[in-house]
Length: 117
Image (tube, rainbow, N blue to C red; front, top):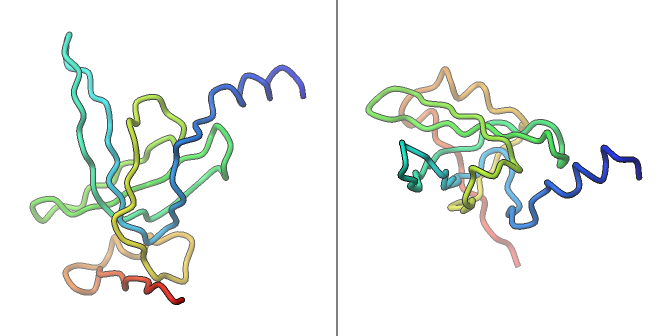
């Protein structure tokens, strides 16, 4: 391994759960306001994942807040992310769910994946 790979391997996180586009997640983000720090929760649907599993990986979460669509893109291995919770698994057939931006109400709903035994 060269020097860049060893530096990147040191900054990778091990506590990231498996999630895919269509899943509903809660992202707990550390927010620093002045001298105080707190945890802010952003819950929504994962509409995209980019960058594979390396240090440059990122994912986009979308939610509707007070009738306005809000999207946030988080670096997957960022130290500002406290932890990620997977709430529900979505049943989708696309890797990028950008079409949800044009849908409102029940049309923007994603089917829940059922566990088969």
